[in-house]
Length: 84
Image (cartoon, rainbow, N blue to C red; front, side, top):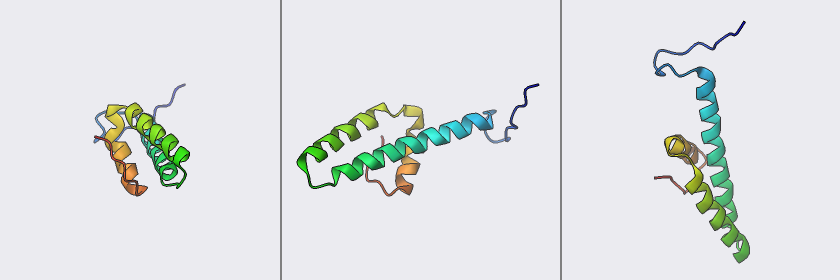
């Protein structure tokens, strides 16, 4: 027997498990961006260059449909980077 999680009326029929997975994914992207930004603040040139490359790559890889959610996490983490 398969038990499905109930869906709320305002989620457009999206299963709760899927919404949680999307939330976790957006949070993970924001945390990675925060960590790359923290490396960029270090006073060592090689680390800054590495952090800059990592931050650029991360921003490019965030799926467009998750960018709004990732931005919300970036605000909560006090990160300067924002996705457009």
